[in-house]
Amino acid sequence: MDTVLLSDSAQLAYDAILGNPTTGIPIWLINPMEHRMIDRIAELPEGSYRRDPEPTYRRMMRNAGCILVDQYIPENPLTMGDAGYEHETQPLVAGVGGGEIWVNGMRIDSPDAVADHIERFHIPYLQSLMREFDESARTQAVIADECGEQQRMGPDFLKNPYGCAFFPTFDYGRYGYENYFMAYALYPDVIERLFAAQADYALLNNRAVLRAIREASLPPLIRLDYDMADSRGTLVDIRTLDRLWFPHFARCLEPLLHSEVKLIWHCDGNLSQMVPRLLDVGLKGFQGFQYEDGMDYERICAMRTKDGEPLLIIAGVSVTRTLPWGTPDEVRREMKWLVENGPRSGLILGCSSSIAPGVPWENIQALIKGFHYYRTQGRG
Image (cartoon, rainbow, N blue to C red):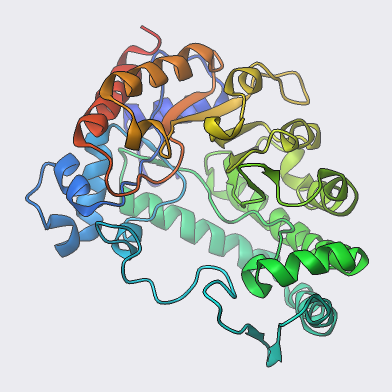
């Protein structure tokens, strides 16, 4: 960070992260997936994004008013066509689409196979990573990745760390939803041993991440991002998370929790039951919010951290309801509601997630005009 002189707009984002008073409200990244929309926001001829993705994407973000970026994914929209994942050939999660699941030469066709693979392969693999872990090398890798992306984006954006802090996760991506969650129910002792091994390795990693943040003066904000809920609630009974997951989640994050770094959680689905528990662990805020799934934005924004401080909130206009199905007036009203009910300091505006193809241009215009207004005028 010392090698990039930040613009005034990027400094606004830094002040919001620190909780300093700001006149304007910083704008988080937006990620439109429709190529024509990227070109239009960038004010370039149609086809520009596909011909020259990264410069076009950067210009799009700059024109949209974005100044804070954690997940820099300029080529991500290339994975999608105008009607969605038109050319997707590989499932995002093992087993989706009916294919067989093989891991390390084992066929994963039952919860028994999941438990067997965890004990024979997965836990020993994590143990080998721990034996070989080099804190200094990991520290330098994080610095190189984060500073490299900041250099690529330039001084108009503030790049904060993303994807570098580790914690235990569900392994449905490896084993498939059905077999993994049946194993979760039938073999909780095996699942907890896996969570413990994941946490042991994550603890080593997170010490290195904190060291990287301090050595390179990186922005002290990390968004923890993992889908653990659907529209109904958590994917497993919250009481099992209290017993099997939360203790290991908390202990592996201790280096960061007891530092100047603010950890926030990406809210996907209805995480209402997890919100107070995440705050009790020591997280400092949230990003995302699927309001239509029961996430009470007003109530959450009124909550405080474990230390009694206001939360850091990245509030997004809904990409599943308001942007695709609403009107420009509804987009404006939702932005006003987000601002009026958000924390007085530490509020950042954006979208709740990526913007899928098909969103009306008039709604995108209303969103961007709102971004520019609140970034320059604040609460008015």
